[in-house]
Image 1 (cartoon, one colour):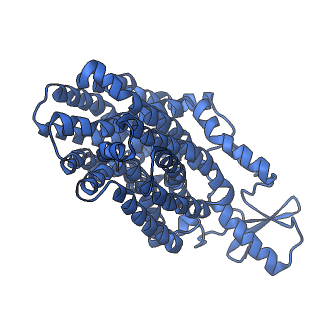
Image 2 (cartoon, helix red, strand yellow):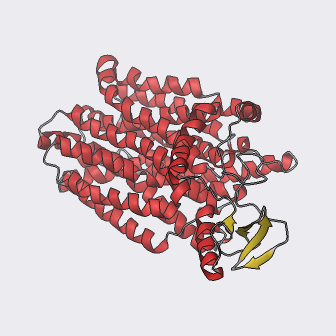
Image 3 (cartoon, one colour):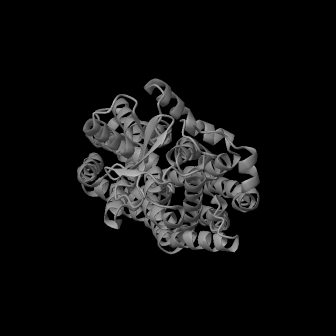
Length: 497
């Protein structure tokens, strides 16, 4: 994009303008190079960061609902793997691949949908993609065999990823860095809590009704969310809001083609624009070492989560003799940890950021989001090693509560990392989050397929400890990037326009 005066890829699009110009239709219009540039006026109520709290939170609650539904759907049927395999006439390991396809698409989807939202706007992508996700619950519930089940689940993962793909970008549109962490914590609780609540729902429904009703219920809940989006979700991406305003002004002023432009307008041909935007997440992922490293960290946690989810039926059903609904309840302690982390720890991310910014002459940096990630870096391997060997020696089922601090640690790592992405790539926050989501979901979706073979070979103790050792390797990452992050970002600086 050719916008005069941009000096870095981190410069916010929604910055305050200090130059004096006339106000037309609530806009500031400047003359530059023979064109009239439409900008947001000071205090403009249509400026996404000037919206009322009600309007902002309406957007947040809708996208948070979308973000919880797709991960919930990804894991809801895991307690019913045996029932699904028996009904469809296949081996349980074949059914696990449905989770793999879904989770992989949760990563591939943002790679495409996030840049498209930066081309066509957030709202239209939410409505179209989540609508398709809702419809896909029907063929999943009616699947006569494994092929239909796998295809419907895989496609649902792609379209259902829209809430994960664009949620961070939407929040970045509406909130300044000092306001962002607490709100983002509410939103991010969905992708984290969904996989923990889904199996509880699936276990109860499979036990008392049928595994097919897992997807009917998911479809009904998704439909309610989609209808709410129609009424409450507003467009928050600044270039789209200004583009709509430009069209109105041109109509009212009977302007000549090209007479008006707007701040941030991309005048490239549509094909070039889309093609260029689709490459942006990959550019961020592979050209920014911090993003690649923290995405790897998230991928380890994601693969650990889904490996545990797919193994819980074996652990609690076969090893401990629990019923399906009881197996579903075993997912609650991890969910409790995620909730406690979101409630008590996430608000402190903003507090730490503001304290460090004041300490350094009000110089806010993305790295100031990372200190609390060290809590998760320490808790993760300790909890995984403890859980692994308590299961190996068949200790009482109450051992499951060791996953409460594991959930808190995940919230610390995920929230700190996602807030770092928002601050470092503010205008392109959706693409940055998509970059991390791709890596996380690819690994998180594929690894659980091989975990049953590993557990059969070495037992639960060493099988789960693999993730603990991976956590030990990644433990220093938040500390290293806190101290050396600015130098690394400067050395590997890339242009995203």
